[in-house]
Image 1 (cartoon, rainbow, N blue to C red):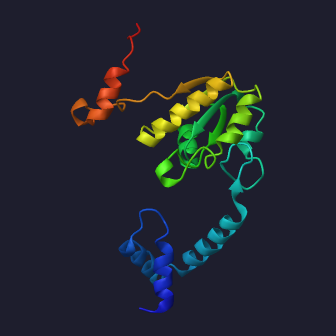
Image 2: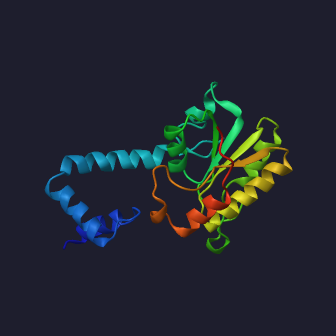
Image 3: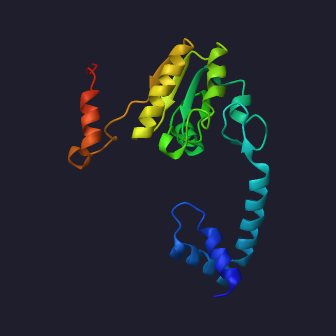
Length: 198
């Protein structure tokens, strides 16, 4: 194997979930059948790395200082949904009718990994909440230990600024069979049950 091919394989391994074998298959595919696609990928990747930054208001990926969502006059500025990642924001945006704004943490609190409030931009979020425009902070973090700790911190932060915190409901998936649901999810869903409406 040539040194350059080895470098290509190692470079492809920076992608999440790509091990040595997958990287090797990708490299061989590009060199055997997809050289034009490889050139296009290289050009777009280089341009994206240079031009895509973060929105100054929500921290989502953006090519401009303020993203299109934050700049839109049609969004409800009283609702602010906090998510862990741009992928989470996209999931909510495409699956729901939510018309408020977002704040992307780019992670979750994890003291063992050195990720605290400062790394998540929570000082900027506190300033935004203190501005008086936001009435509801919708916490949409994951149901992991770190996600729950982050949710608790966000709820406290919202209350300090007179903002009502809310949390996405969690529990059984639509169409799911009870016997296949994990114990933690089932326990949480059972404990969070509500009255059935007519």
